[in-house]
Length: 342
Image (cartoon, rainbow, N blue to C red; front, side):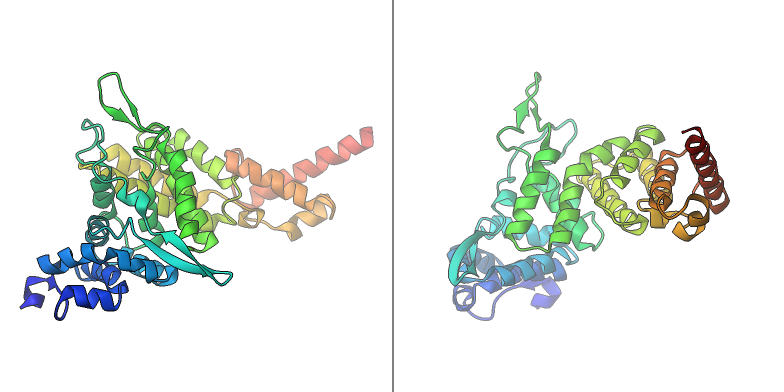
C-alpha cells in the first residue's frame, strides 16, 4: 500500500526508530530524493523532534548521505525536507586530534528560506528558487552542489540591498557566494579539487549567464580569461568545467520560473563550441616541442610555444600544424636578425 502511494514511513514508532540511529533522519531525506517518495505525516513530525540526536553522528556519515541525496532522482524534494525538518540547521561532529568537534551541516541553506526576491525576475523566494533550479540539473554531483550554493549569499549583510522601487537586490552575491561556498564545502570535508570546481562555478555563474544574450565576443573574452586563469590543466578539463557551469547557469534561469530565452540557449551552445577550440596548455597545440626545437633551439622552445599558445587564444593564429610552424619559423628569423644586429 505504501509503495503504491509512494509513501515513506518507519517500521513501528518513528520516534523510536530515529532515536536508535539518528542517521535515519538523513536517510529519510535521501530516500525521498532517490525514490521520489513523500514521508507520512507522523514520520515527518517525528523527524523534527529528533534533530538534536544528530550531534552524535559523524561528519563522514552525514556527508555521504548528503551526496547520495543530491544524486537522487528528485534532489529538490530531499533538500526541501532537509531544511523543513531542521536537519540543514543541525550540528554533527568530527574527531580531530582525539577530540570531538561540532560541525554545522547546512545552516546557510536553511537561512535562504522565505528570503524574498524581485518578483519582476523571480517567481520564488531564494530557497524555492534554489530548489526549483536543483530540479533542472543533470545527475552530476559538482553541478548539483554548484546549483545548491549558487545563491547562498543572497539576503546576507553586505549583499542584500533595496532598490528605489522597494524591490530587494543582491549585487555581488556571486562573489560573496564564492567565499561562502568554499567555507561550506571545506567544513563538510569535500575533496579539494571538487571544492575548487564548485566554488569556481558559484563565483562565475553570473558572469557567464549574463553573457548568453550578449555578443559572441563577450563570451570569447570570458573564455580566454578563464583559459589563462590556471584553474584548468588542459582543454579537456576546461571543456568539462564549462559544460558544468553552463548546466548551472541554465538551471538557475529555469529556476526563476520562466522559460529559457532563445538567445540564452544559443549563447550556451556558442560558449561550448568556443571552449572546444580553446587551448589551455601548450600540449593542446597542434604541434609540440620536438617540432619547434630545430627552428628555435632548446633554450627557446618553451618561450615560443607559450607565444604560440597566446596567439591561438587571442584568435590571431589558427591551431593548425602548418600555420603554427610558419609562425615559429617567422619568430626564429626575427630572433636571428635581432641577434645579428646586436
